[in-house]
Amino acid sequence: MCWSATADLVAGAGIAAVGAASVTLAARRPRDLPLAALPLLLGVHQIIEAAVWRNDGGTGPATVAWAVIALPLLALWVPAAVLCAAPPSARRRLLLPLAAGAVTAAALAYALATRTVTAEIRGHTVGYSLGLPQVELIVLGYLLATVGSLLLSGDRGLVLFGVLVAAGAAVSVVLWRQEYISTWCAFAAVCSIVLLLWVSRRRPPAPRASSGRGRGAPR
Image (tube, rainbow, N blue to C red; front, side, top):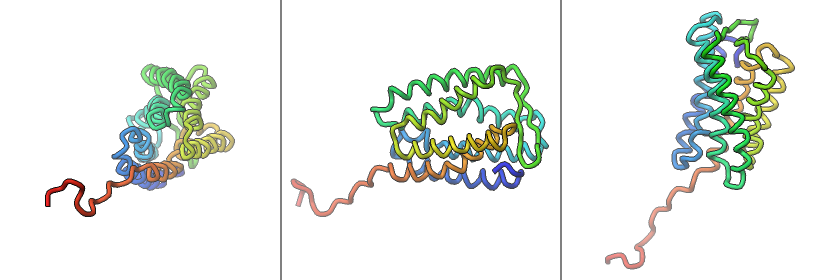
């Protein structure tokens, strides 16, 4: 959980395996697939951070790839995936976090295209710097898109996931303020096990095998 390259690699491989299982379980519910794939994305994300550790931070391709996933991609992926999986009664209110995610993702993508993102190894954590303007507003939009969409989903399992991720965000701010985004993503990855349980409970029942001849079947 971002304490070293080895920890990121092991955690990433484990979470990616959870994601692969989630996608397999959700294959018969296409609307759940984007959300079921989130642990897979987060697992790959942790593995990429292992490469950032190996490179001793810096501005290389691993740092850029990590930032692209952590910043614009997750800001848009999470609310869109929640909207797909949410019950119909919740979809109208989920348009707000989706809009916040779209605006935030656009701002972050522009920043990544015009600025240089750097990673710095700080003891047992990694700090990322992009020099964002109006960072408080961007963080607010980011959290509304990601945590807010889960809390507004109307699904008990997703709300629980949202509460755990929100708690991780709060702990990251209090304990690792300068390394907030790195540690928060690690918390979210570990919490992805909740999504595996959520997916497993939403699978449609397997079709029952036919027992006996149906009415009108040839004799």
